[in-house]
Image (cartoon, rainbow, N blue to C red; front, top):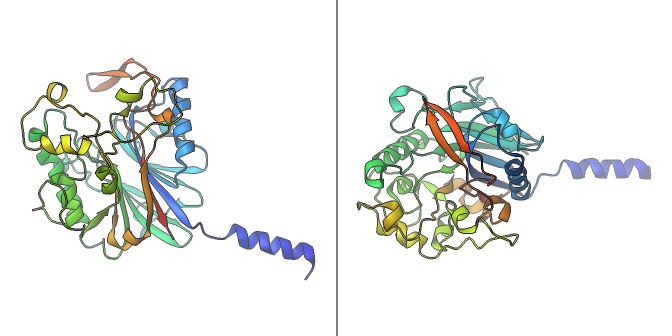
Length: 338
C-alpha cells in the first residue's frame, strides 16, 4: 500500500471514531428573546462556548431566532416556535448528533399539549420530547419547566406534583427499554415530592431526603445538592464578581429548602438562603452506570451583570430594563460515557 493512501485511510478511520463521552446540560435563560443587548448576547455566547455540551435543554425561550442569536452554527435547534407563546422549551443538539423522525410521526413534539393539561403544564409550556441519534446511540430527550413557586409552595406544590405524576405515567412503559434523559427547571429541588415521584416511579412518594436508591429515574444531580450546590440565585450573590469563576457551594441551601416544606412563609422575609438547586438532570436506570461526572457551571460569564426587569401588558412581555446578565439560572451538566 502506498504511504499516502495509508495515511488517508488512517485519517478516515480516526474521523469516524465515536466520542468516549457525551455532555448534556439544561439551562433556563431568563426570558430570552431576540432583542437582548449586545453585552448579554456576548455573555450567553461565552457560557455556551465554555459549557461545551452536546445536548442542551432550554427553558424560557421566546423563539428560534432568540436561540440562533446565541448558539454556534454546529447546533441544530428543536423548538415548536409558537408565535403566541412567550416561554417555550427547546432542545439543541450539536452535530454529528441529530434529531430523528420516529415512525414518520415527529421530530420534536409537545407531549401534553391539550388545554386540559394546562394546570400541570402552564400555558403551552408543555413537556418537550425529541429522539436524538448519533454514533449508533438513540436517546429519548425530554425537557421540562415546572410551575413556579410564585404564590407560595403550599399553593403551587400540587401542580408540580401533578406534572411529575403525568410524566412518570408517560414514561412507565419506556424507561426499561429506552435511553431516557429528562432535564429542565423543576422549580423544586431533588428532595421535594415532585422530584421524588420521578425518582421512585410512585405517585405516593413524599418529600424528604432519599432513604433508598432511586428505582425509576436516576437523579444525576442529587449528589450536587448533598454538597449544597445550587443552580438558581447566584446572580444575586456574584453580580459584581471579578474572578473568572465562582464557588458553587451555598451553605445551608438544602437545609433551608427542607425547613420550609409544608409551611406558610414569606420568601423575602423568612428564607435566609435563597439560592437553590432547581435545574436537574434525570436518566433512566439503563444509563445510570454511564454517568461519568456532573456539575454546575461556574464561569463568571453566567452570573455577573445587571438584572433585567419585565412586566406584562395585555398578555405581552415588555422589558422595563434590559440588563446585561446572562440569566438568573446557571447551566447544570452531566457527562455520560459510551
